[in-house]
Image (cartoon, rainbow, N blue to C red):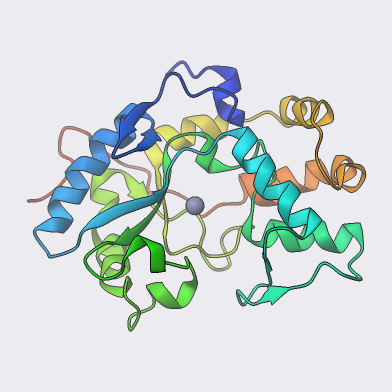
Length: 235
Ligand SMILES: [Zn+2]
């Protein structure tokens, strides 16, 4: 598949399609529609709370967290103050829950954050781990996705002990296409994009980009190796 270079870093979205108000990569949208229909037959209403996110949107998240105008969360999802934090500490804290602009899998249109609209209203969703545990409102959704999502080409890239990014039981990736984006990700390209960007904590960042890319872009859970688009599910 020919992937526009700038699409890898969230700088292009014209090739994406609309899916319920979110932009998604075309094959991802088709697979998600099929998977959602299968989930619906089990009483689960799959809804997206985040699909494609642009470089500019990710930059806004990064800068507002760095400046303390957006809530920063620690590893247990508790709010933490930016006061008395060094720039290095701030970078580490932001990276717990937010990607460095240019390195988010949400730039690709292949990755989505999901919840069960039958169990929780979108406005009440906090996107924290406890909501996706067995007793949480999205527990059934999560269990179903663990069992079935690979049949539709999806998997969880952020898992305990397998990824640099904290485990995200709400984040699914359409691996047949996402893996191609990952293979074409270039450290020097994202470095030059960020060098030309007005981003907070830039000095610390520029020195750390190789480590960040290694840990947060390339260290993800291994995807299933096989997907047959002509047999996407076992309905
Ligand atoms: Zn996500």
